[in-house]
Structures are given as C-alpha cells and as structure tokens.
Length: 357
Image (cartoon, rainbow, N blue to C red; front, side, top):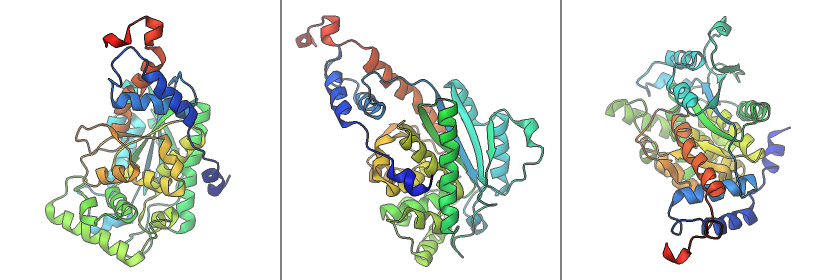
C-alpha cells in the first residue's frame, strides 16, 4: 500500500452506534452522566468498535526513536548521546515506560527509525521487542536545510504504519498508545505545533528537558528561523514534516494511521506524540475520531495542540516525560469506561426506579 491508499481508506467511526451508546449510558443505574468524561470515553469506544459491548483485550505501546540535527543548536539540556542510551534502557526493560507497560499488561514495541546509534550485538540485551528500520541516521539541522526530503518524510510515516499494522494483527491489539524518544524532539514538535495551529512560537515552546531561560530564548529563535526560512505549508502534513519535523514524529503519525485504518482506538501521549497527531489529522481529519488524549503535559504548547484537535485529556499530572508514559497511565481509565458501559445494569435490568436517583 501507498500512503494515499491508507489515508483514503480511513473511514469515520459508527455514528449510529454512538447515538445508541449515549442512549444506553442514560439508562445505566446512576444519575444522568454521573461519571462525566468516563461516559464520553465509553460511548466513543462503542462507536470505534461498532458495538455496545466494547472489550479491550490486548494493549500495545509503540515507542518510536530518532535523532535530530537541530541538537547542534544547543536546544536541549542533554547531549545527543542520551537518545542511544535511553533506547538501550527501553530494550533492557528498565525505563519508565517499561515499568508502566508491565503494570498495565501492555505489549511494548521499541523502534529505532532514525537515530545515530550503532546496534551491533544488541540481541543479547533485548527484553522488549526491538526493531531497527531507519530512514537514515538522524535528520538534518533544519535551521540550515530541510529536516528531510519529502520522500523521507513519507518513508518515516510508512515505517511507523507498517510496524504498528504488523503488531496490531500479530498480537491482536485493540488498544494502542504512542511513545517517543529523541533528544531535541520538543524543538521539532513545537515547530510543527506552531506551524499547524498558527499559534505564536513563544506560546508553543516550553523548556523541554528543563533548559535554562537563556536556552529557551534560543530555542524560540531557532524555531522561528526555521519556519521563516522554509515556510512550511500548514495544510500539507508532508511539507511540514519534511521541513521541520523528525523521523520518530513521522513514524508516530504512521502508528496513529495504523490504528485508524484498523478501526481501533489510539491513546496519544504528550507534546511529541500530539505533534504527530496534528500531522495525521492534516492527512485525514477523520483520524481525530479514533484518538484519545492520554494526559495534559506540563510542556507549554501541549494544551494548544489538544485544543486545536478538540481532544480532552484524560489525566493532568504535570508530566513531561514522553516515552508513552502518560498514554499508558491513562489506559486503565479507558478500560474502566469499557467495563462500565458493558457490565453496569440499566434501570430496567436492575429494577431500580429512575425517579429515585
């Protein structure tokens, strides 16, 4: 398949089932919409799965990793070598996302789609499913040239789609989450967010790895310089990705497309993943119907991105880690929503008088 075929074949969620789910929710033995947003989550699950009895069986988190040429511009508190070191931690199963995934019985797939790392003899370390499928070793410094070619941008999306599509089928996943790793990727994500949402760069750009105020000023200037130099078209996702994006961001967009294509929900993590969600949305606005926002990141521009997508975060814990941590943490609430609409009795079934609640 080509990208255009995937995008074309993503169809809306089932509106008829959505209305039936809302009607069912109104008859559950509780005051009307007493569970608030949990009711909304349950109804959306019904519409995605096209059933009034949604069942979440197998979960997976896809952590996409890559390096960024813009790291040369002193926009991160950590050196670029940390990308490789953190990927190794994911592989060994000792990072935060590994612990959270184990807690939630969530299958973890780690993919290097464009780092500077050399993975010779890595097989002895693996405790997570690890895939190396690089577009190339890191993006270009987008203050000087396009981050990647248009062909590479499409390739990064297709790599993410193919990886997710494969494991959705082989592991029978019906709820997936997105995760990321890549030093300086908040710079690329903020640039994408500013471009697509048309918010000011200052409003979209935060401190990432807790950089100093001076580094933050530099980061803002770097993003402005790139946008002014390359003038990415906010309505052309491939143009935006190729000029100011990252390989892992493209791959995450591909993971999101795979979920939508297979008609399963996808939980979006923080700033990086949401920048990829913006790209997926620009490729096909229907993709938003399959997305849940796992949490609201402490990273400055995340709320603006979620507002643009009209997505309500499930959690707000002042997190800013990435890796898929907030997305996986929110999964139990999504599972609870499915259990409630499936297992809680209606007034009629329980013979409870509605007028007394």
